[in-house]
Image (cartoon, rainbow, N blue to C red):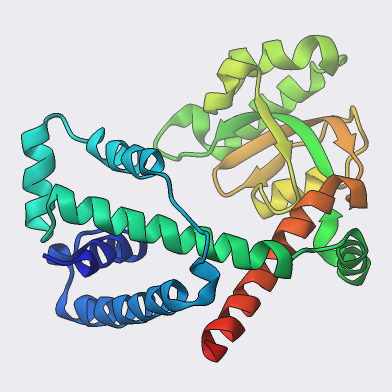
Length: 273
């Protein structure tokens, strides 16, 4: 039994959501290439001078072991599953200690070499403002009458006049729409007064989308047909689109740039090691 069996299991679960034994021949071949690269990377990291003064406390290793052990109903099932994957508790502990050591060394290396300044984040933001565009959002309710020739009430010649009459009754949507939707709508949303919620462009059927995003706030549409039937829409509210302020996305940008720097640094560091 070797620590590579743990690496093999970890890589298979992360990449294929299955254990090595459950993989196809082609998947196993791909897995072995990934394991070979990961194992070589670990050896380089652990052989570097950066490991000096890096220590993983025994309590941290024990916590990692117990977090895996807690997934099993019993000690026997835990050990049986380890054995099925070429592992035992001793090898697992050693592999986890190795993994944590590698992570600690990488964290130390990148902590000083991959810092992202506020200026870098701001430059990225202003160079990529299109990535921070916020679409217009509309809150909408609807009343739906489905079209189905198998049912007389849902044939077009009867469904359309029925919905048109409901539309004529909507003198005050704030007071009436929810009640009429609960009584007449054939959509599950009828249980919530016809509420479809907050929607962005492209979330509804094209005909509904086109009608909704041409409406004024508080406006009720004429009858609109979609692939599933006839609708009357109520545009309850409109939240204007625009660009998300830098302050709202600063931390995400720093995290994104930091991870990119981290990958680039490790790639170069491993190549030079």
